[in-house]
Length: 234
Length: 179
Image 1 (cartoon, rainbow over the protein chains, first blue to last red):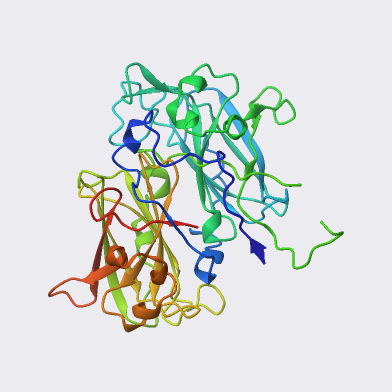
Image 2 (cartoon, each protein chain N blue to C red):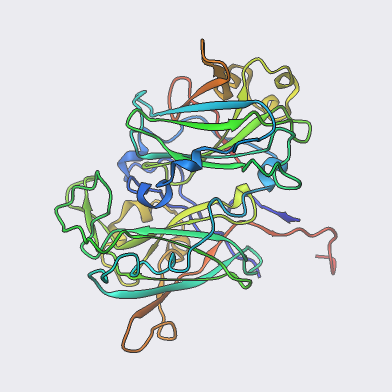
């Protein structure tokens, strides 16, 4: 049985971050009530979904033609707080196309829709917690949060681990993006190291020659092995 | 080794083509599921009382009618559900009323994701009028004047239909939990 320590201060955003305007009328104003972990919190869906198809993790294969853009490989491990791989975790991703537009009815950014790109994929981690996606690099896009606001290129990630309390929705960014310091969504995380961990790393070993650049992105879910007795007097 | 869990980021407004393309995820109880079939409707509203049109998402995790999450669970029942809210900030799940779990009153565990939520909110849905609510250990942690925000109400004139409003902020704000 795992245990799920409470979050380290500064490593997660607070609900209210005025720089991200949408939080102002959506963040709760009352303090949260601390909930002891019962079976309701310690259990969780293994998959939220139906089984995964063979091309679900390759976003470039979902239409007859290849999508426009720079092909990339995004891979990494899903780990727990002890650094152990989390097997059999569902990883869902979604993103804008190479021009910075989502396949969504309300995205009215005047960039072209790519008929060969939906921008949604799924994978399940292997026994060591590894996952891998093939996609195209998403474009930056403007949003109306403030004057001249642009989101850095990013891929949304949604993960289920072993329990209800390990659920995580986050975003992966790309290295050396000049928009990162200007982005209130990423900057809402107080701790600089915690922000840095959401930026993927270019990885030549993941890169496939003559084909696609590779980026590594490891994700840590809550949870560590329960210790039933103390060892070595510590 | 001790690692720090990755930071959460908002689900944003444009998730539905990836996370909620399949309305079947709103149906937890298949044909033949044991127990009392219910519908459970949510409306999510912000601090101005305005609905969150199409840019919030509800996930449910609940036990089956006998209070089982995974071990020996009813094969016609899946404890996980996920829907986006519609243009009125609403969504409706088809499920069964959960059984009691570990000495707790029947409840459904809920996560709310939305544009403007940098991390998900955790809450619970209990059922108005349920006798076991009076001694539920989690409800006991909630100030009495706020417990009502966790109670789904029966919809008048519609048997087995329940409704709850999730108020993210302000007057009547829903109780959210730190898990």
